[in-house]
Image (cartoon, rainbow, N blue to C red; front, side, top):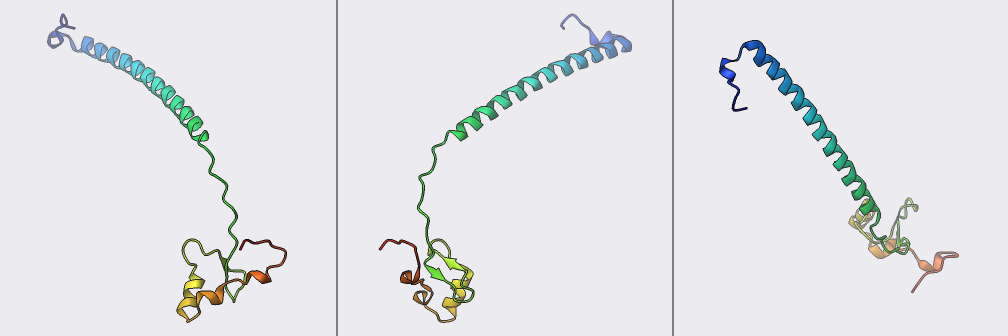
Amino acid sequence: MEGIDLKSMPLDELWALHETICSILARKLEAEKRSLERRLNELRRSFKKASNETPERRPYPKVHPKFRNPKPPHQTWSGRGHQPRWVRELLAAGKTIDDLRIDRSQLSGRRHRR
């Protein structure tokens, strides 16, 4: 490029040089883009493979409900996590947590630990 005097070149030659450079740049950019997309796909595949190889969590036993809403009785709570709204409302109304406790002796056919 040292031998080219751009200032003294005619406009037509400068424009032709410009178009040549643009087409070369477009080809090189497209090739670089394809290369990067190929690499990205490889990384995605290896990431998916690595994430699928994570060890499984140990199985947790099912937690049975310990508390029941008197009205409606289908609402239950195991005693874990945040208190449900119905528990908070009943406690605020003067009930105790023991008033909501499910009597394990009334459960039919279910084995439970003591």
